[in-house]
Length: 564
Image (tube, rainbow, N blue to C red; front, side, top):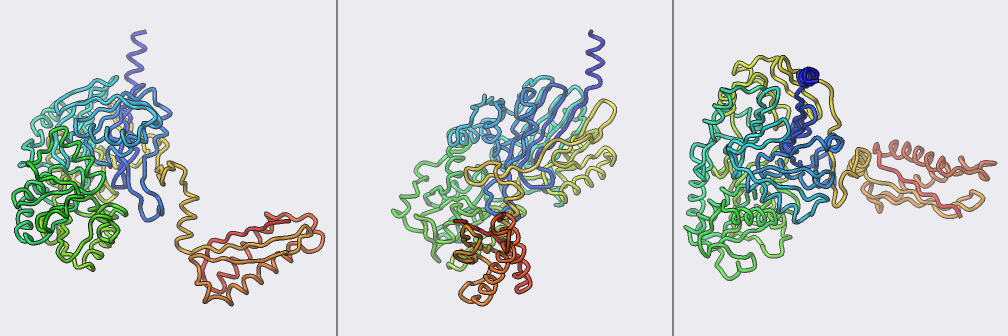
């Protein structure tokens, strides 16, 4: 019996299955499976692209995890950014699994769960950098790294096949705000012990050099506060970047300003950071938004969400005059302490344009060094590869161009090209003691969130929405009597297709086309055995041909037939 078990174990392969974060920015989630044990690294959400009109959020397809729920030993969180934790409440609606993460990461998750209680309230296990946890056949070690949020960690996962090292999001910051530099010593020790595969983030793989330290933003803030001492400052940044927010608050206190926080996510995350001791407030500096009228404009700093131009974020509402407490004037300076995530450039541009048109001075990273990335550039990525010395390499966290740039870096660092695996969402990489290769796929993709609906928006609905947004809608309505003759109509209603008041001739001809179609379909004996579905289909086909001939457009056509 012992021999058979040992032989079976030798034949078991380690399976690495990305369910998000490849070929995209966001939705990071990686499944690592061995036999009857699964661990999940991160559980993030994404934001909709231009081909998802009306969609609010995008979640990873977790049907594979639901099917194998009994195997899941835990979810390991590298850090508290939305693209790594945003789908946790969605996951917990489906399955009950324990969550492991550092204090700030779990503090932010707890806030989410309090707002939207899940079907299953999970066991939340707080860990610190340096801790290890046993999860079935796996042993996970959390390793401190620098990022644009406190308490970020890489994860060294010991498996029966070897060590999987997942960098999470990281950079090398030799002068971090909290004085806790990335643990290069421990990463080097793990590398010496042997790393079977390195899963390495790729966001800045196209950028040369090193990512600047977060402290450089402090110097820029000082210049801005001095230069605009007679103005009200409105500073937009990522709510999760508590070190950036701390620097803004400290600069405000030094310059005799009060600080008000705007935006729900900003309030929630700063609240969690203060409660857990990741931030400190100078006495008397923080005020409620309702108190700002008690002070002169140049005595106020507003810290707000919306640096990515998100519709209905605090900055968006301010820029377009929809905020109930903040109205901007030429006496305001808006500072965008961020860079646009790929795909958000137009949204950010529209906010800047709206602010400038209102006479507001806008300061961003193109004019001042007011933002630094939280992601490793090429030299830092090379350092990570040199320290871990992996046998196999898989670039993660990025679009196709980022993954490919990271692949090229790995080749430069001497990793054989046939040991580098640029994967896709749902694609399974299998590793044993002798080799690694792709082997099949699992169900994967996007689950779309629209309002309270989760997963009820599919490709057909998106196609219809896109069709409507591009070509408009034409509705044909008519009533037939019991003999099949037209009793009223046909009436034609158009939305987003043509301006009705200026298209009378076109619509009159369209009504004639519909009448002719109905007469043709219901002539003679067919009146007594009329199939209204067939009539509706023919109306749509004939009207579509007519409209395209006259306008070269293809609006969506709906035909409504009532019979009395």
